[in-house]
Length: 138
Image (cartoon, rainbow, N blue to C red; front, top):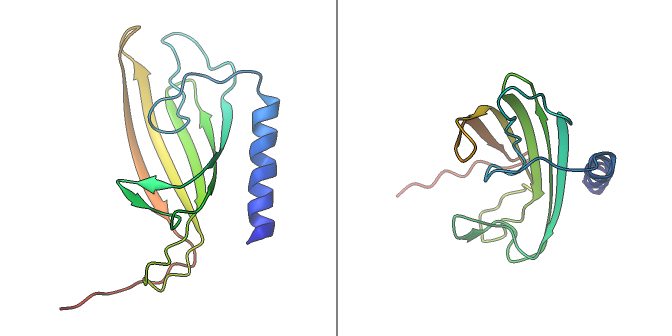
């Protein structure tokens, strides 16, 4: 687990250091919207965050512990993009889950409409390797 996390951190830092500037990010982490008629100067971008807590829709995903998060996006000139994002997780609230990491995989398409508006359509999947399925019955 730690070897994998260190590898992700190193690759993320490499992505950050190899790129001199980032395109404007949207609310979808590091999705790059390519301006109309222009090619992406750097089609491959990355991000890395250290957060005091990973909260999603009002619920902590790390049991109020720090989160190390990073992602990569590859954008094509056509507007299509591929994204992978990851974070450590800790579901110790009696769920008996062995998941320690979350990887989100995203494929999407986005284009600007004008200088102030753009659209973005994406398909996202949340992946929790080593998670156990818990069935609740009444």
